[in-house]
Image 1 (cartoon, rainbow, N blue to C red):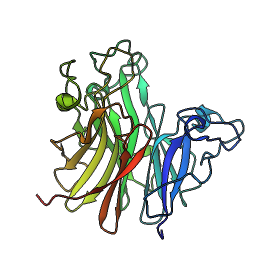
Image 2: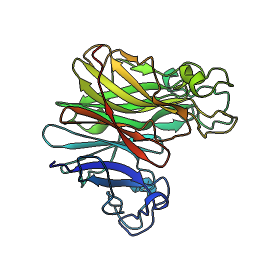
Image 3: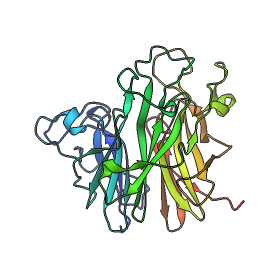
Length: 319
């Protein structure tokens, strides 16, 4: 309001000198922090380098308070002023509510099982399976549901978007009346909304030459808005490591998808020019984008490098 904007980011002592509300430096990747802009969203600063959410008791405990892994928060505000948040905690999707965007409720799981697990412990569907990857060896788990989430509110309907499976990855959504318990959201009828590339492609392909396979390993971090008769989604795509290693990714991109109909829970189509903004590269923040519409102008916030975040002005095509 009045040119003041808030942004929720996870940060740590290592990245921004953050301490928890008990006074202890927060280990990487960090806790939820509040950043503020007083110049209409051009620049943001963190007024207080302290975790926004308090712990139930001191010292803070990650299992109870999520204090060291409140990652990739997404926030949406309903028309009655209620705030809703989804964030990743060790690949699981956590939901909270707030009346002022500052003090948040206790947490709820979106669904269980979630995160990563093995079928020896609990079965999973084919969409939730972690498939084979030419440059990854030794996966401990073979199921995935969660990762960096997305959230969207339309009247009384709450939608939460998560990643289902890996190699290939899928974009899944859950929906339900936002006035009901958050852990009672149901899987959307269309499952998945869309999928990533079905294969890694030739291992020698990199950069532009690998664009056809850019979102093979993961699709996640949905940012949804409605423009006209369609819903648009920005999302993170990861092809995975370009050399033989375990787990570490080197090829990230930002993608765009659009609902085919005027329904979120329906068929989606991916932009054939993905990834957008820049070619795949070692930039782990590029896929975590935000859309903000100010005075009918659409701005996209996303990483310009691994250490900086920029603002782009979008011009919507009339084609």
